[in-house]
Image (cartoon, rainbow, N blue to C red; front, side, top):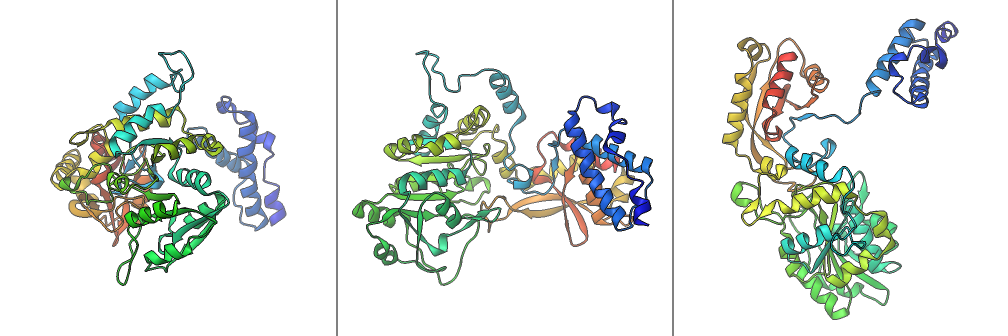
Length: 455
């Protein structure tokens, strides 16, 4: 049986002859796709589970080629309610801002060129002033993500020496990467103090020796330990560092530069407050509550920032012109009374349940009564997370479209949404399917209604 099925497999050249519609693709890429797909069919044939003839196999491969011939990154509708959804790209950016950046940056731009002097400039100049003024720090810079910011800082300040860090702050930052791993790869030695739930000032004090290079304080932004706990305030560690002449660094992971509690966003850790402690270096993400692109932001003492800029790793993790441009716009969006409407991330986070209800009613008004009845759609109150480890214990009020269809399972309905003309990602809970409106970008209401109509 297996041998007979193996004979049905076409050759790569045979399939290539049928690829006349894909001449715009590189022939090596086409061969790569065909080879991989044939390998899948070959495994089925060996197991005696291949139930297609040669022509059907060719057609199946052509369907795969058609899918892969299109850009893999697609614009989707985020119906999860999680604004900072890592899998969906984290902080969304305003289309008008993106269009403006494309017009200014797609060609040549003054990334590292001083237009006044006519000499080479520094790409960090587009960021430093904004970062310093908004956070109150002496200086600042940007790299391509916060893990890179931590790696660079550790390497420059403590390479070959011990980094003192509490056991209760050795967080996993995502993708199974952990603070101890980053410390090790930075060329430093980890010196653990305290226990998982309790660390004391004397633990840090007694850990200091001739080989101590840095005291690291990590904000556990993606989880919280409650109960019998104790941690040493950063301000006390800064004083200890000054006394012992040891630099102190704070990794916030996520951080806020504006208090939005009056708009319903629970207050997190304010970067300005951390700066006031006198800590030497502070690192945090650009694509979380800041609402910018993926970036690692570093602020602190001017002398330390200068050292980081001259470290060879800074070259390896520097931002390109696109990241710098989007980051510049994100920082500029913070005016005296908070983030402007151009900061799409903060706009979505602060949209009230009342406004979301109106958005949901608009979507429903575009649907027929038959469609609403068929899919048993209704508007319900919901609560959502911010996402990406930001404010992990806090929930934001929201509104969702609830689907309770009788003629299709929620699993199949979810798949239909994800494979729609505009892929739409929701979630299943209690045998019901939901599209949360917290993350429906203004202007997507008609698109969402169109997806539902076409189901």
